[in-house]
Length: 367
Image (tube, rainbow, N blue to C red; front, side, top):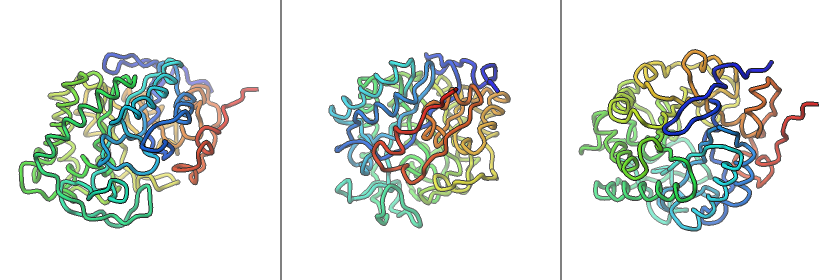
């Protein structure tokens, strides 16, 4: 059944740009970039396949410096060679009328000295336990970042934001979710600091807002979005009171940064990244929806029941980020618009495989 007249397929303004629909290609780490974190023609083909006229793409998590992680196949945007690689991607997306943001990323204690050549940084010297990400290495105890280093990181993020604009991106997303660096500051289990960056929600979010201020200063608030994930349950982060912590963050965003392009929040899930089955949400984003009045992108779980995306768009005017469903369906927007069936994804090719499981999924043939 055609869905062209549903809320999911109505225009919406994000920052200074107009989207023609609300289906978002969510940021997805795929591990296929070239040596030294340089995107290649393969990435240009991949993003170009999934670009749509007036549609939003959030590019894969991108390291802000070598120390940020540099896991095999992950991209950076801190060298000129990397910038030139990204130019191919933004050109491919723009050629189809698409809009693309660069997602600025730091893995924090999820990084490995195996790849960065030094001890990883984190809010506190607490190692991740019980998980692995993008490799089979054991997580090591990180080094606690100093306030002086934090000041330099504000500058590093600013430079990468400028690099993203030079590379042709329409804006940048500040990744502060999913158990990575800034999310490690938010969560009480990974942040045991006793200085002005630890303790209360205000203190644990201080570094986040310092970087955000820096990003806004160099590219303008309408080009910036933020990604958050209360209850991430990934990379061994937990918080004693998620509603209080992220309630403070979202309230501050609404009061002081209401002109952000959009806020991107992850739906509560049992185990992020690792499940192939439906789930029951024990928590809810509703309290944050009541606070944030600007455009909201939500991601997490819509692959299992795409109808939920239509329902939320009707109820809230939501933008919906799809991940796994977009992996297997480069033409997902048209499949959702027309009610066409979707391809199944192959999990074994999520993080490796070259073109296989990356650019070889078929487009729908309407015979």
